[in-house]
Length: 275
Image: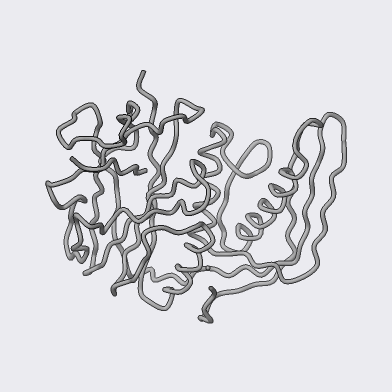
């Protein structure tokens, strides 16, 4: 038996590409909405807009330019955090201003601030391919004890295909941030059952037959669909990672290892609740 594995920064002075700009974010909410939440969202959007201007990421929407119009809230938030993660970090450096004004049927929350955008250093000659065996699963709830037997065919396994162009150490993280608070970036590979992570040719994870990553639907989740973000980090050298991080600490760790030749890629998969 194996436990069900749901799949889904201290700052170091390094040479990074940085630019100081004034950024602005606007969010619309209904009059009965939470103005504190609106304030936080306006600030976050201002930071994302700054990142987009400097790093070149384009995120399109018909309402607030954050996500595609056919995304639901959970997938939208997951994408936003991933783009921020893979592009860089925004640091406040100067004056800030916030106001909320009622216009017609909505409050408009506006956050303006001077920020410094620091992009991740990249290594375009360090390349790899990363894919999932599939991007959509229909999964039941896990057993009451949270343990799924390896032989239980009710739960499909997810596997990860990694193909490096050069010998590379592989690390896989699962981001479940919108499902839980706190330390939501979880290292799922290498793990106690599968520790060898240096590869020079195409490989499928897990590499061992003694376990699988079984996909199940989280208990007591308020929707019938959720999304999981898998982040693949390939490096020329060994990296010492903890097993779990907060969003902020994970970004800090990526800056810490930026002097090493490495790259990051991600894939999102969908899990539908099986009735």
